Amino acid sequence: QKLLQEAKRKLGEILSAFEFLDVQSMNLVLNHLEGARNPIPTSLHNLYVLIETTGSDESSDKQKLEAFLLGSMENELISDGVLAQDINQASSFWLLREGISEALMKAGAVYKYDLSIPLEHMYNLVEEMRSRLGNTANVIGYGHRGDGNLHLNGSTPHYDDKILSYIEPFVYEWTSKHQGSISAEHGIGLMKANEIYYSKSLETVQVMASIKNLMDPNHILNPYKVLPHSPHFISSSAKLY
Image 1 (tube, one colour):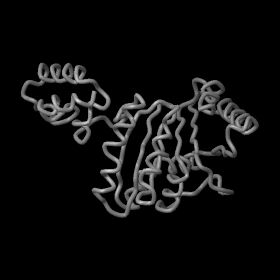
Image 2 (image 1 turned 180 degrees about the vertical axis):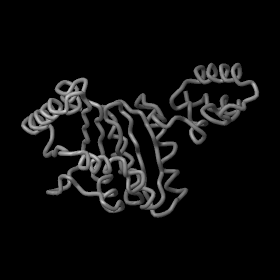
Image 3 (image 1 turned 90 degrees about the vertical axis):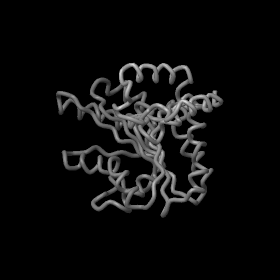
Image 4 (image 1 turned 90 degrees about the horizontal axis):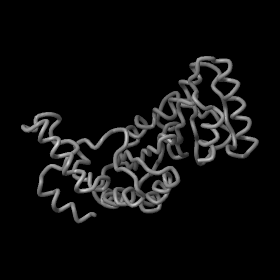
């Protein structure tokens, strides 16, 4: 959090990305994606941050980023860092972050959760889930630190209903308890429609349903998504609040 605050202060309007991944995510990519290389190979660290700037003056932006990197190391906000020297090196850095989903699929079964959580609690859920599942799953956490979007994933060789029962509804209950949202950039969709009450009150969902009925009385537009699948579920789910 301190590093993010410092990045906003020192890099200002040119700061365009502040992504994070944990060491479990890094190991997954290094082990399953061809061409992936650790840019800081001296040792593994618990957390990694990928920062990108996009300004109009490349020389000035580079100076700001170099000064930020040096200052963050001097203030012990980071233990090590490296600056991409060209577009190819920058692409190799992004591969480590954007290649996580592909690496997860190659590793086996995946239990995926796209959550929005207040920054001060963001990684706590990863640690709690890791403790909850023990060695039955490889729990990894990564995402957009700048806007509190956490991608929580559990990786196992094969799907197991017992493991799923340890994850759900715990992950939704935890997120709701910490004033988060059960869905962030990927939306509610089909699978989370019946879980919307963890993020929205009964009254809010009823208003959403009334607007949907007004605009789409035949329920032919993007059917079965976002809203609970039946009014009966609405009345039973109200017990959550």
